[in-house]
Length: 438
Image (tube, rainbow, N blue to C red; front, side):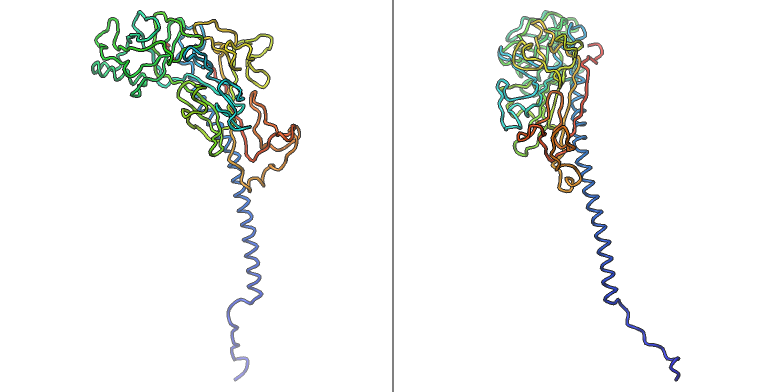
């Protein structure tokens, strides 16, 4: 048989050692490139998340506060000679003594306050932050008090023109009145009584103060609801400088809520938080107390600037106060306890810086991100620690109104750097009555 006709034997199938090594090398190169890109994209995504979180927090907090600030004066009577009789609460009386309800730049030196965590917080709130107390409407309504209105004192009998539950019977009407006044089983919420001259008092109905002898059928004098309450007592808050008797006609303002806001770092997790309390800020109990609840985490600063229609002090040429350039001086405050607008109340003459002359608030929220991860730190400038005038590092709490940047104790010209992203959001809202017919 010819050799050419024979079939050559086939070589065994498979890779040679060199081919396998080349294939593995190519696979390693591809995986290395892919994993490098994956880690870089993951770090970039984390960096973007840290960048956005404080912006979202600040904007949410501003929106949240705007709801209450915008409605703070909705229940003020339109015939009042003052713009905002009690929209923003800076002071009130309790047991005959003045109590401060709003603060500017907490230092720990305020009456009843002290530094609780050095360089971080006081008993009332974080160092350098503000406290704001305001009256916000929830389901606003006014009900006429049947004349004559009695002199202020204990055990006063008041009758109200309230027929919201008269489609049923007197019991149904009383239950509807309890709901309107926020009765929680022990007492009503804190409300106000206001007369046509703008005079007002705080008002609260205890459980035993709701009486059952009201009559839906009374459509002549409209004494549909009868309550017996103390309109003046040591435990009932009163306007600054004391209460004055109210003149007919007098109206009960319901559907309002007194709310206090502050920023306080939680000593357990060291996270600063925006907090709120349903009620007047009380230095005797809110230090820090348990009445405040957390609203948002990682809110590190809250600042309020007060806007006047005219320069209250004259000569300064500005209507914005408690800003970086102008802080309300303590000497103009008749109570001499703080740097917020004075509040004379209805029984005293309001001075030029009185809160009733404030027509708007500019408030700022500064928030921070969670602590930057190692991957996110590699994509930003956290390792630059130059002086404030030349640095490109923005990882420190920014200045806001009259709360300056915190400087490094070891380097007076450098800010106190950290490993967080920060963002400040600001809004300005006017105090004006938006309730028709009020």
